[in-house]
Amino acid sequence: MGRRILAIGGLALGSKLDDLVLELGGPRVLFLPTAAADDDARVVDFYEAFGARAEASHAAFFPWPREDLREHALSRDVIYVSGGNTANALAIWRAHGFDSVLREAWNAGVLLVGWSAGMLCWFESGVTDSFGPELAPLRDGLGFLPGSACPHFDGEARRRPVYTGLVHEGVLPPGYAADDGVGILFEDRDVAEVVTHREGATAYRVTAEGVEALPARSL
Image 1: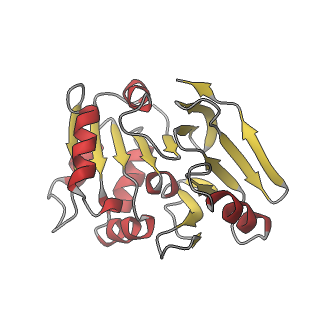
Image 2 (image 1 turned 90 degrees about the vertical axis):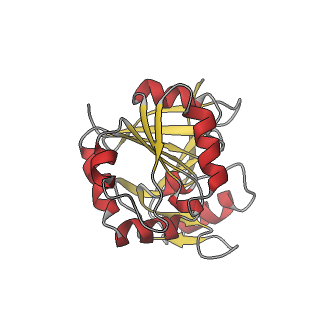
């Protein structure tokens, strides 16, 4: 199986995207709520979505990660990253060497999935509220996918103008934006498909020249 990432703009767990995750990946799903500070409510949401029909597990980093984290992650079909604070999640993963484990899993064919922070983290850069209530550039993503990213393109009023402005000004490189409820499936580093569980919602290619809506398949 090749390298694949399903990058979701938002509104993911409990939607038809859950079916797609299992279809694309398989039943062994590892959830990473690191960006949400291992929030119990996010973990409960995950098990409500996947617990009854998958071999579901989650990995906490507080107070420290499990000893077999690398082995467990590499044995999964899917690694699913929550929303939350992207910068904090990246810092924690790097402190524990887990960024390298994620790259190893990606190269081994494990499907990487995430919404919001879990979309943004896979790219080189993007626009984030990780540093405060005002949106700002994030330039040190994992870099599995080239360019920049923006989740919640239609879900938060400031996302579209701030992101398109940063790309137009050359602060961020060209990239992809996704409305809430929309997933962009990357095979290797290329877009293979856009899917949506919300009518009228889609993903976009954003360059300095403008915004191009991409065709989306309804789930």
